[in-house]
Length: 532
Image 1 (cartoon, rainbow, N blue to C red):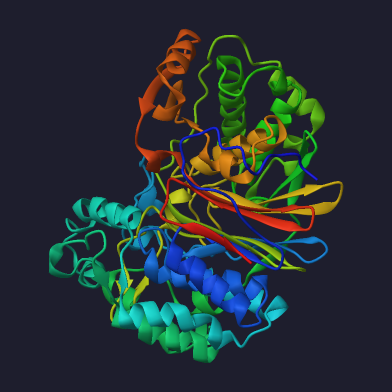
Image 2: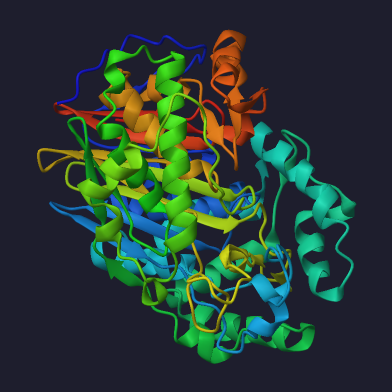
């Protein structure tokens, strides 16, 4: 059992852990968390709760995920199972469309890949679900039909997105704007928003077990809209979509074993950084010391340099995860860390739009993440459906010689990564920190907070964060203080002290503490944790 004090909260957040013995749920949006608890109290299990929360989040937090997004998950049922439901690029994708570009586009049909979230919901429920599949849709349908008050952080993101998406003039973007920006504006905090289009689509998915989305009427509408507005997605692309059950990857850090999904995700970045830090003995330094922050940042730079060079659809990688995770390789990379900050080139991927959730009961524990990638995604919505398509193709490289080069029938580099802790082969629980390249950085910082500094789950989320950007550029959360910022600057970090909470990710955690489930939710988001 990890050693932490449930009464110790050294940071400024006013949240406390939520404890229970039978079940726990946590998301970034309170209404979605309630959807999960609704399933548990109805006799469902943690998978029922997780899927219901994922479905609800497509309605109540559309700024970060949607019906047309991707999803990945880790599930503990006595052993850990990995689900990669991310979709492939269209078979008709033309790599020549990206020739000469230095970065991929972020909106429009060229960056739309097959959406996998619906297949993830169905696959998880088929394997572990206890309640009827249609019952898992009830909260989302209620929110979409009757409306819900938009929470403050979600409303802020929605309003920020307006400046970007309202400028999109071509016809393929007009249905999206009609659903999410009626009257050419975003909803205000506390304003009630509803979506009849979401209701019809979610009902169709619920009643057909997701079949309509990939092979039925919804699939036909998606393909027809693509054909009339310049998209590459075909009926065969949708019908051929299949989830992949994969073996998670792990590394040991302190007395924790940290689990991530393998490529095409960036989970390796967290494991590579933790491998490097394993030999740095961070515990000898105070948590808020320049030494601790410097070592973590430098390890993350090295990890990203490898991940952005090598990670892609595993069918196209030339270096294996086992090679990258070898202890000898970690030692060689660790030897590169100096007292001064170094510069390592990374891809500079865009800021993401993602939701992370977790659930636990007496038998199952679920770590699930789903996303439209960059905010609302591609800006394309299938008319009268509420299906906003993600822009996961932005994760490809326009470089034809890169393992992650844009190509037909290929999964792109994926930023979303659910994670999980075990100790001595026994489950501790699910955790995650959403936010594009912030995700592995958040995973590293949460692991360090728990393993090195003994923080309880809520304090581990509350603690000030850093974020490596690219080159020598680093963001430091303003709560870390000017003194630490100056000390890191003296070490050569090109550092900005930032008050913008949205730049540092949003996390959730549920951990076993003896017979108790301890749940915590990110103070930088609207959400909450519940347990009973």
